[in-house]
Amino acid sequence: MPRFLANAVVEDCLREILHRQEFTLNPRRKHGETGVDILARRGEMAYSIEIIGYKGSGPARAKDFFEGFFRAVSRLNDGATHLVLALSHLAEPGLPGRAKQHRVGWIRLAEIFPELEIWIVNTDSRTFRPTALRDWAGSR
Image (cartoon, rainbow, N blue to C red; front, side, top):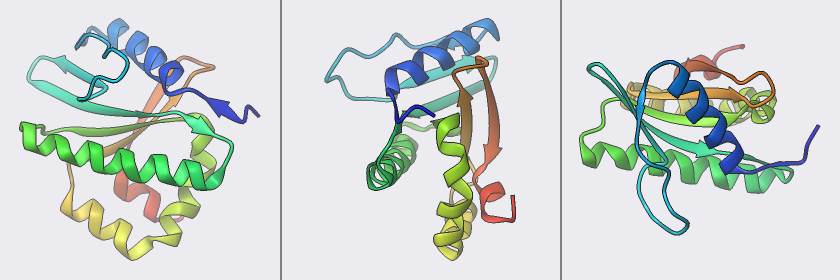
């Protein structure tokens, strides 16, 4: 299993998938530019998406996840109604443990932020799977 997958690889993959599904996408941000990673629109639906790649170090993955969470919920300031943390499929095996470690807080966050989803982006199969934050707090 790779020990590193750059955010840009996950972002490029998800942009490709969403484009195929006829979403309108914001332009890719320039290096150092702030703002949402992907704003995807189709019809009345708009998704503010924060991308998280994969790092080999557990503490680095945790830091990326927590920072991504706060970046995602900060989009509420912009009126976002659908918030997404898009994670590499390489991070999926660790999500149940993370949710279990923070179970009570995780469940409360899912209740407080019902608009927040986790999308698992598989860069190998070029697919993604949307999940609810709450889904990870159970026995998945």
